[in-house]
Image 1: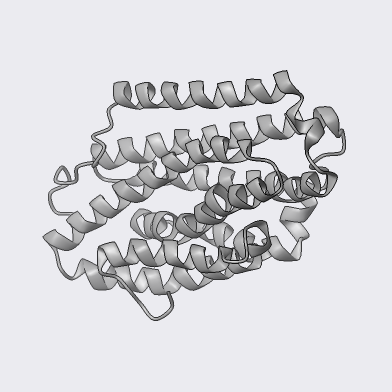
Image 2: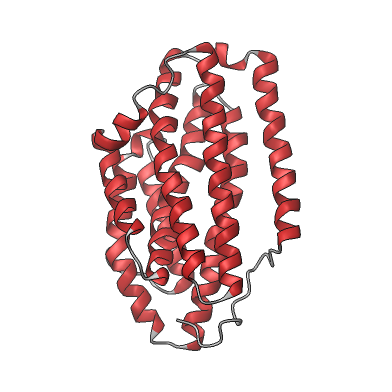
Length: 265
């Protein structure tokens, strides 16, 4: 995809030292929010209906995020350049962080409701709303061309799912007097934004070096954007009324940056 494999430059110029510095600051902030939840009895004030919505969202969400982590790890394993390998490896760590924070938040909520999140696996495997996303990520997990897997995940799937759960769900939470979810997920969303940024920088480099790459990328976008959008539409109840539109706009924004607008998107 890229002739000069070292021509790609991560816009954040992320080294291991820089990554750990950024992660430490973000983790300290989230640790403080989670501690305040425990110290103040925050969860006892949440409405039971909202806790039910959180259980329906957070429990199954762990499964696709784990798939995102596995796909990012595969991209890093197969990528031809050390710089791409590093970016994908840091993204893999970010997704592990996201899984851990979701699981920790669920454990906190179980302290006030022991049944919180029960049935999450069943919902992921058989719940109607989750099946478009499950099919999409499972197909992505067996996409063995690392570059296509990158486009499928970071250009098509993650922008719409990250927008829905990291941005739209916290907005809905605020309407249910759960403002702290936004502080936790806002930190996770900063990771997700960087995932898009380094991917756009890489693909811009590929197009700049060889214009024919644009059509290859456009073909992959046509293949994956429809299933990604269908996945977000099926799960739109976990955001505000505009959630599906916002998810579509998140995908369109990435495609616009790359000049890859296609009819399916």
